Image 1 (cartoon, rainbow, N blue to C red):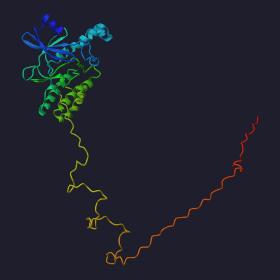
Image 2 (tube, one colour):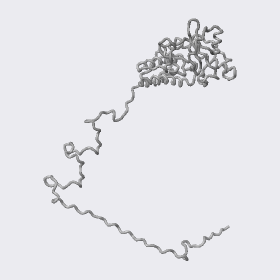
Image 3 (spheres, helix red, strand yellow):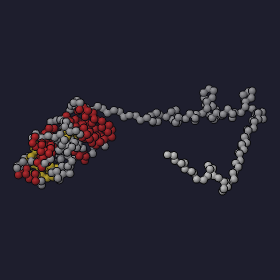
Image 4 (cartoon, rainbow, N blue to C red):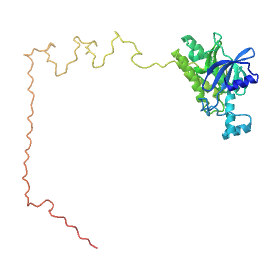
Length: 353
C-alpha cells in the first residue's frame, strides 16, 4: 500500500483501499471507497522513481500565481525543484477541472489532496473498469465513429487552449458512453508553448494511424489535423468546427488508365505496322516494302520481266589496295661520329660585370 493512501486513510478522506488497478510510468491507480462510492485514486510517483522524466518541454509556459515560487522554480534550487514537482502533480487536476463541461469526455475529478487525485471510476459496457482502447478490437464501421468522436473531443480541448501532449490509444478508455481521455500530467498550453503545433499534430496523427489500422480508408484524414490547427491560429476554431473533406485520390498516369484498343492487343510500333496499298489498306502479303534497287524491272504491261529478259547488272568494281611505300632502314651511327648539336660538353657563357 502507498504511503499517500495511508495518509488519506488517517485523515478520513477515504474509507478503504480496495486494491491496485493499474501501474503506469507516471503514477499508480488504486480503487478506494469514499463513502458509498468507489473512486479511482491516482498516486503520482516521485521524479527519482518514475520512468518519464524529460518533462521540461511539456512544462514550458506553465506559471504559478506566487511570484516567489515562480522565481524559485526558474532558479532551479532545492525549493524550486520541490515546487516544480508539486506543480507537475497538480497539472492534471487543473486540466480536468478546466475541461469539465467543455465537451471532452474525461473522468470527473473528485478531490486533489496531498498529491493524490481522486476521480470517478470510468466503467465499461460490462459495468467493470473500462479497458484501454488499444486492447479493444474494432470493426470497420466502428472505426469511423471512434475517429469522429475523438476528433470532436480534440477540437473541444483545443478550444480550451489545451493539448493533451501524449494522446494515444493507451491513454483512451473504451467506456460505455464512448471513448474517454485520461492521463493529463503532460498537458501542454497551446498559447504559451513554442512546440504546441508539434504536440497537437503528433496527438492527432496517433489517432488517425490507430483507426486506419481497422479501416485503411481513414488514412486520408491525416490532413484534418493541419486544417484544425490553421483554424485555431486564425481564431476561427469553435467546438462545432468540422474539417473540410479530404481531397480525392490522384489518378496515376500509366497504361492502366486506358482500356485495350480494338481487339485487346497492345498498339503496334510505327516500324511494326504493315505496308499500306494505294487504297490505304494493308498490302496483301504484309511484307515490308522493298528498296528501290531491289525491285525487279517491269515490262510494258507492268509485270516483272523474266530473268532472261532482264538487263545484266554491271559487275561491281573492286579497288586494288594502294601500294604502301617501303621504309628504308638507316645504318646505325658510328661510334666516332659527332653527336648532333656539336657534341661535347656545353660551355658556360662568361659573365660580364
